[in-house]
Length: 242
Image (cartoon, rainbow, N blue to C red; front, side):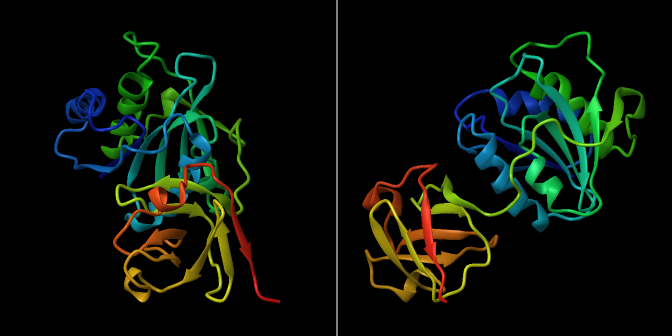
């Protein structure tokens, strides 16, 4: 399967154009929309989201990951194999966290360029054909050059910042494996721990470990983003017990 992970949003024609190219190049292969609301232009936040979300997909999945503010510039284009899955996208750090957290990672630079390559849409014209080749089981060796490492690598440790806000207003962070007796604060607020939303009263804030293993700031039947003024990039403080 091909899994789409982008900051393209759902209002514009970009996702549809991406899917059309994939259907053309890899007919019969399922194309799944994982997320098209990665914070705009934010490869750093996207890298931590991608690393948290990818393990829920089966081995062999091909992720077409495009958060690419440097599109059309000399920034690199890569294929990454990590954890039995494939990742195709820009070499701007987006795939670096998932790559660093796996022991079997291999990296290829995409050296091929199609005849028709829009400077502002490498997702459709460059990355999609490569992802389709891999999904068909036809590894495009002639279009790639194996390299030792990515050109841009983010710290693969936990990120103590908000990396995503869902439509409920829940704020996901880049923090993993936080003990339940930790004290968590952000945006001037202090959050108590709960295993799920209903562990606190309606309208009350809490922190929890969400379904993909990231610390999340939430409000029971409300918006943590609205109540606390949380935004992507806000720092989150965790005081762990001694």
